Image (cartoon, rainbow, N blue to C red; front, side):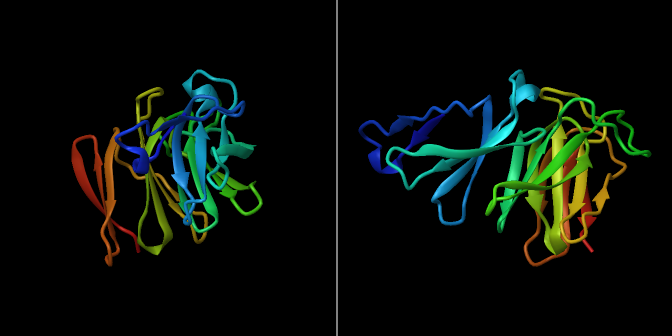
Length: 199
C-alpha cells in the first residue's frame, strides 16, 4: 500500500509499505488517536488467498504491520469504540429463510483491544462498500455487484442485541446517510430513496 504524508506535499509525500499479511488490501480505518490503521485484506473475494485485518502501526518510523487477524471476508468496515465491524462475502454461506439470495455474506465483529473475533452474523451477499452507524445502534450495510451479485443488498444490524434485519427492497445500495440528532437513516437503493426509522 502507499501512504501519503500531507506535510511532505511539494516534495515526495509517498511511502510504500509492504507486508506478507497484505492480500488484496481494499479498505482501511484509523484508530481514534490515529496511532494505527486497520487494513482490510479482501483475500479470496478479490482473487487472493486469505482475508484478514492487518494492524498498521504509525508509532514506528516507517510505519509497519505489527499484527493481523484472519477473518472470513473483508471488503468494508467501521470502527465503533474498540469494536471493528468487518463485512464481506465468503463462499458458501447459506442465507436464512425469507432472503431472496441463496448465499449470503458475513459481518464479523473484532475486538481491537485483544485482536480476536467476537462474533459473526449473516448479512446479504455482494461486494460490501457502504457501512454507517445510525441512531440507536443500528448499523446499516450496503453492497453492490462489483465482484459478486446480490439481490437483497441491504442489511441492518442492531449492535445492542445482535438482531439482523433484511429489508424487502432489492437492488444495489448506492448511498446511506444517517441524520444527526434524528432517528432516521436515508438509503438509496436501486434508484429509490427509502427513509428508515431506527426505532
